[in-house]
Amino acid sequence: MIETLYTNVCCLSGVYETTYVNDNRKNNAEIMASGMYDATATTPKNREHWRWATDADGDEIANESERRIARIRCRYEFLNNGYARNSVRIWKSHIIGKRGPQLKIPVTDVITKQIKDHLEWQFYWWTLKTGLVQKLRMMTGALLYDGESFLHLTHDPHIFPVAMNAEVIDAKNITNNGMEGMDEYTIDGIHFDRYGHPDIYYMLQRVPNPNMNYNLQPVEVPAWGMLHLVDPELPQQHRGMPVLLTVLEKIAQLRRWDTYSLGAAEQAARLSGVLQTSGTPDISTPRPNQTLVMAPSPGNLMTIPTGWTLQQTKAEFPLNNHGDFVQSQLTEIGAGIGTPRGMLQSDCSGYNYSSWRGEKQTYWSTIDVQKDILETTILNPLFHRFMFYLAGVDDIAQKVMRAHGWDGDRINKVWQFAAPESADPVHDAQADEIKLRIGTTSRARICAANGEEYEEIVDELKTENAMQLNTFTEEVAAAFRGMGNVSYVNPC
Image (cartoon, rainbow, N blue to C red):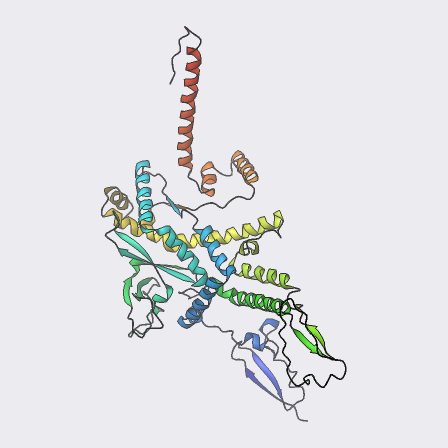
């Protein structure tokens, strides 16, 4: 037999393929790569796995069609799966917390203690009027099931003195779908300038309803009035994909496994089975090619036809290894979203102290990164816009903005988040004491790590000490008065 060879190029991996034609070895022939890396070789065994691999850029991979399907499916699991919903709740609780990020402005040559307290109070009052903390929780949770979130800043005369409100916008409302005349600087509802900064957002004023047949035209929103919370993971990616998307199939597999396990148990509990015979059955009974259905009543005995035996259905699969499978799936799901398995299932009984402490350290590192993204994309730009509004109605804010070149980003500030609960507070306190003794930290840094402000604690301690001193002197004075003619003068 004549052996013929021809070579072509693999369209996905870009490596050369060698295929045997008119040869009995062609079914076993493997595609040979031009290099020496096994991972770049495309073989009949791994071709199916790599057939969707692509070298498209980030915007093409996270295109509008992909994002829409991803949002629909991730939201469905978020609304119907306890593990997915718990992961969203954990992120919102640990990133934003109960009171949300607190603005702290250090005292400088320009900003005195009185100015600092005034600006912090004005911002705190504005967050209460607008419900900003709840909206930040919603935006943080949307990272898992939407991949991104938008905060639209609007004029609101009902909020005083800063007449600015903040509204959370659904990710699907930012789109230029159906618009004509878009240039190459417009990417999925966002127009960028020549330097790569967003300058216009195209926003639908109403939520698209798939059951309604109306055409919606987006309106242009300047970048000053829109903040975009997103964590792109690929170069040249400007829109976000849900965090849950990576583990979505694992969540679906876990749901199907639970369904099959429950179905097997329910089937066995119904006293269901198969009639079998080892010999010639009675001719009065149905023949093997016929179906016999019997529905026994609860609490009654059932008579089996002559020559037949009942083999009851058993829940042997998949219940035997159900627990191990669930634990394995939850471990991979937790790794995909940066959350320990114990937190996902709200059960840490399988951990020892060292293992749980190690997993929590990795987890809190992930949470710190998310806090930094929130500060960079939402909190700092929001404070900059807030100071502009406040400077128009407040002389103190106007003085501060003028001293910083009307740039709110130049004002030194710190966003203080709630500190995580310590697993061993005694051990942590001893560690802080040692660091203070050897000079590797300060009391202010320790307070900040615990979610507290050092100056507030100092003021509270001064007040407590003064109260204790007054109480002590009054007790001493009363004791001297009880001694008769001994006079006593209060040194305070």
